[in-house]
Image (cartoon, rainbow over all chains, first blue to last red; front, side, top):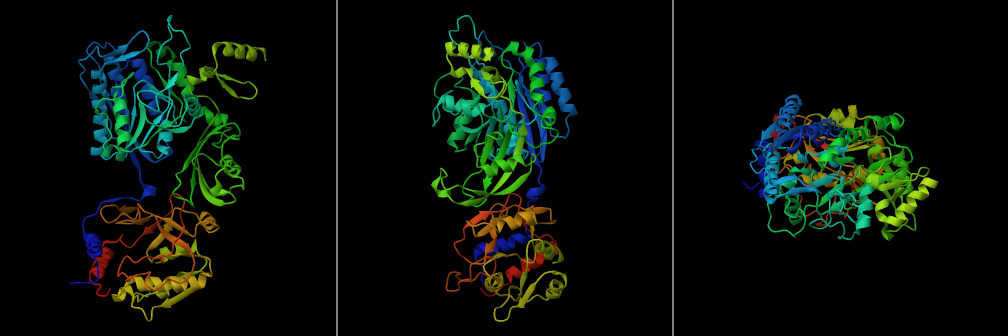
Amino acid sequence: MNNGLTPFERAHAESIIQSAIVEPIPPLKRFRVLVGSVVRKPPAVVSALLRTLAWQRLRAPIDVSYHFITDFAPTDGFAADSVGLLTDFIKNAKGDGNRLEHNRNEQESDYGDGLETRHWQASALHRVGALKNRLLQRVLSEGFDAVWLVDADVLCDPTTLQSLWDNDDAIVAGVYWTHWQRPNSHSVGVVHAGPQVWLRHPYCLDGRGWTEADFRRALVRRGRVRVWGLGACTLIRAHAIAKGCNFSRIGDLPPGPMSDGEDRHFCWRADALHLPMYADAWPDIWHCYHPEDQNQIDRRLAQLQRVRPESEVELGGSTRASVGNLVSAKLTNLEQPDVPPEYVRGRLGNLEVLPELQEAVASMDVGSTRLVRVHFPVHYQLAAYRGQTRLFQVQLLDVKPYRLPPVVDEEHLVGARSGSTLDATTLNEAQLADAVEGATRV
Amino acid sequence: MRRVLQNAALFCDELVVLDDGSTDGTPDVIRAEWPKPLTLETTQSVSGWWEGGAEGNSRVALWNLACSRAEHGWVYVFDADHELIGITPSHYITLLSVEYVNAWACPLYDCWDSPDTHRVDGFWQAWRFPRVWLARALGKWPLNGSLGTPRPIHAGHLPPFEWKVGIMPEGAAIRHLGYVNKAHRVAKHAKYLHITSP
């Protein structure tokens, strides 16, 4: 019978009485995140890792499951102790999606610490890539919304997972800084710390419109920056994995240090799939990279933990920012949905936003949103907005006392009175000596 | 209906209703429950959806009636089983103060089995794509072919003007309650498949 419905309309009507897939409406939906790590570390490092994973504070409705895969070689004498820690953690973790797996690694010599830096052979990189792929597969097969892959020697402050989640991106990594090379008697220059995110393969910190100095400055200032290489502390949404993003070898990549790393193959593939990747420098994260770094674990954990519990005391007991505090906010132009949201980070009082927006941020509690009518001045830099008014939604994502990221804070001089910072890596040795002397004299 | 009216009263100064042939006493419920100014008309010359006629004709008549009352203000268009959630009345008022856009969109959740769950498979994707539910009363619905052949179902709620559309704040959505109850789903299915006129 032709009842005036198109085939599409008829099929839609028929579907009313067919079986349905039903979910909680979005305001009531809880998200499932798998926290995964491939572990081959001594117990001091594993203990710190587990402590930092457990102390994650989440504002979003997220249920976390843990999945560790050990990769110990038979000659790793510390393996039993580390496995004991992981076993206890899994046993006591909430929920029923937690898992501990053991990969028997027979390639004991393909990974280790050398005089200057860590050494990886291709077999180690590919093996770890395959183990990480197991975690990605679990995301798809068990319906997780995302996976947070954390290297076992990467220690994150309590705001890290929440900050990565707030990014709304398919792939985002928290940023940390490492002295990849230990200085030794043959070093002719200062060895600076480098981030684990980069702009061009295999590890170039310039390009794509950035100078190296500007890229470094953006990260030190806690920015959120698009990158073409990342790893080690990465939140990957399920749809990116479903699209084909994984750690399998994609072919021959440009030669260079770590060029065959599983993270390189992942990033190259993400780029080929048109999945933008972002570096999120908001959290405080420390990389326990060299064996002697283990001596710093307690101090570093105290430093990371200070970001949250005591910070509310430092903020006067509230979660509202004062001038000079670091703030992280998301600004959405509701009247122009084609314009992507802007993520603003910086010191309150010095944010690079219009005054009405900064004032709104100053009056908000963490996690709250406000609607703000923003008046663009007649001399505004973007001509299309001059003399215009737009309605913005402002969300205050986080607030914390001002401090530089771990490790890179040791490469800055800080003015005692003004709090302004001088990046020592931007000065030559003579200038640096002079600047330090000047600071001491003052 | 009571629930929908209480919700609408949070956001609207006046209610305009087009009764397209209901048989369950809806007009009386509305008169009893709506606390603010009310305009209620029954379709006369257009055949209503419940009579087996085209949904589109009712939509046009309702829009024109609402516009005549809105006097260049804003019109929030909703069905008798729609509830606007996730936005405070204060934020809603702020939306009405804008100068750049003349329409506001938000997603719709086709609630299924409960008001707190929605259907997400196959055709049921309205939750992914915000649609306009709140718009400036720009004028009458053009009938000279812009509407095309009025559709018996899924007729647009608003005229096909070139709206400049903003997206309501995150969290705002329409909760569509018409499919919550299985018996109602079965009745709608039967109604859709027995519509005889275009």
